[in-house]
Image (tube, rainbow, N blue to C red):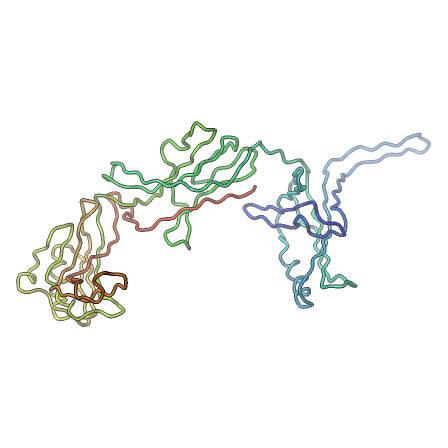
Amino acid sequence: MIPSLYTIDFIHGPEVARMLDAGEMLTAEPLPQWQQAADRYAPIGAPWGEATAKGAAVTTLAWGVIRKHASHADLRAFCMSDVASIPSGITGTLRVTIVGGESWEIADVTVMSAMTMARVPCASFETVSSYVFTGGQISQLIAAPVGDVHLPSQLFRITEETGANGLEKWAEWGAEIDDDCGLTGNVATGWTSAGGVFRMTRHRSENLTDWDGQFVDCVGSPATTGEGSKIYWSRSVFPMDSARKTGHLWCQSDAYGEDSRNGLFTSLILDDVSLDLPGFLTGGYQMPGDASAMGAHLDAIYPGSTVTAASATSWRIDIVGARQENYYVRNYLGWPGYYIMDMGPTSPTYGQMVILVNGRFLNGEYVNDGGVRTFVSKQFSRDGYTLL
């Protein structure tokens, strides 16, 4: 047995399957073999025969690797799972990298055979796996010099500009990359380094679970730093905020327990303007009995708006088509104020009746004048780097 001085990857499209790691124990050195068809002719009595190449050369690479397992059960499960995991029915590229040395690729490769079995006899739980790959031309992978490359931290900035949809704020992310990498491309397709060594892609999320690529390249990107590098800036397609926007606003009772004193609505402020609804002039709207009346009055101003209530502690107000002309405005549902105890354990007024409760702010989902979702509360970005 000898330790592997190779890593071997089977690359098919964006997928990369690691077939051999450096340091794994080999049964023998990987054996590259090259052969082609030929017409041979050796006439009787001639001192020499001759051969004429017919082309159609193929390259084969075969190796065997010994792996250790924790138990008999793990050993036998690996015999099944390893063979089942071999990429079948597809053609790709086999990349062979020598530790501390060169990288080679075999083009148009197919897995010809793969076999994993228990190694017996042996002192522990070991398997022997044998792989044979056959493909086309073998060639050395020549990469452009990239110097001392590291994965950069993302940069972030907020920009503000007046465009077709008025004054808006934008979230933009960037990465500073050495010029030696020779990146080409854009945020839609990703940026590929010179020599096709790696690709950088950018991903956006609003919940750190679901990721998309909804970016556009910033004007002037990539920006030269003057220090042998460029910054690749991208902007989310969704504005952080728009001064002019139209929204669906709502306010609702607390699902974990609403105070019954909050069920009498005496004011409603939208876009910093107090609405003169008829019920406010006669003492307010008491939930649940006045829900339909308040809903009708709101619908007359904002068609499609509704107020629903099952009790004084279970209600919801939805306002459709609410217009806003500035970034920072007050959208607030009011009721007669009362005081509650301050229960903040570090507060100097802990236990005292000092907190005034006289209403609740409305939540909202907005679009700008171009119909694009805006006022997006959370946006995250990350860069991905893929070896090609």
